[in-house]
Image (cartoon, rainbow over all chains, first blue to last red; front, side, top):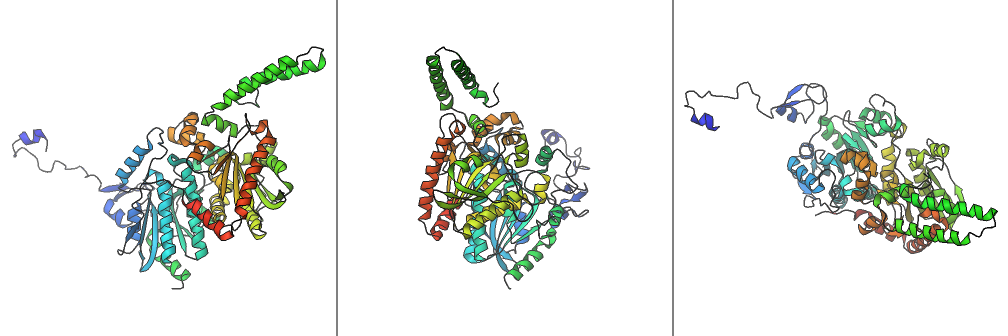
Length: 283
Length: 317
């Protein structure tokens, strides 16, 4: 209550001054069709537009909690946190970028890893958080992925990873490039130990993440209309100086060109991934 | 301005042009200019020394792309005998941005793979400025698997601005081709030795760069993104490439400090192109020592050490 309102006798005060105003955070707009959606409906629908079925971005934690059974849940690698070892500074300090990302996402890094169950089948599941510096892969993302995969190897249970990332994290320079080799190396172990890895590519998955772990699934799945590619569309347009074909680098385009096994809607992922894993595991 | 010299090398270019002129005159006239030539040569030498003593990361980035810098095929010519180039990925095409083949190195059978840039416009178009498409990486993997079957170590030479960002490359699975190389190389049952000889451009470099021993020539670079690319994304201004080069720490010296590379191979003063023989002698001794060391390891130990090497990368709290 402002000082002016406090001064006013109560009979003059109008109740419900917020009349006509929409309380913050009740509505969201679909990023594709522009429909105004009731936030709680959208959340119930896992950030998929109830009007046009557009798959909007979803937070890592929400994603994993929706994908895995309610319990048991165990987070892996949450104790490791990022470090600005290069004292990297562009227009902002990397340290400040990290702080801001941690504050806005309430996550400590761009990858969240959990051991849990998928319809009672024990799995390790990892999800990228795109709002954390574009889901970029630095040392912590690489290490958490490694620990998740090593846990899957140790317990002989499958690994599922939901990727959404702009690629390697520039602020960690070559160290982040080498995370591509690191994550691919542990996936080679999984391959030789015959532990299934299902990669789910979501909007957007590009650069160093698509060119390493995301494309190495025993089964590669994508959500509808996700942007997936090595180079970003803008870079390609500038290089080749032509307009890009319709639907270029979208899931449907990749499926047609043989890079993916299937496109699965978000609401069906639990069932689909579960079925695939059960077949692969002879269960 | 002499296009064969970089901005900061122009004073050297001028001096050397003068020396060349004097040499011409000396050949045709009776004057004895030897003394003057010797004086200028000494001056040129000390000029090179002073310029090269304190190169900035950006200057080294320019040297790594020097138009006269030796490329993979130049090194192959000096370091190997019986090099036999093998072509094609058996699926789609032969990518000239990567050369691959089998050869002998000091009597031993080896596989050799490297990025290849062109010397002139037409060759650069054919070789796509050393920027491979998926078929290049698939050819490289095919040759690595061949090397594994016939128990030959694989020697790779990295020199690329990056994997090609084109429509066809995306259609044919650039990401998948790179990813598959990273995965398979980590488990390849034969020694992998990588030398960065020019530009180590991001994923396009790493796709033939996973190894047991990583060396860099002293004026080469290795980076997650080009300084120009980094500047245009983080500073929104490609003109800040110089700042980006410093921030990214792309030089051999900095990367050695960060323990990201194993060894720096010294280039002669003024850069590899000024004395290819010496550069190759230095590369040869590194390769030779490394191969001897790796050959003594049982393959399971080699793979365990490689896995350890690859998975320890990272700095965190």
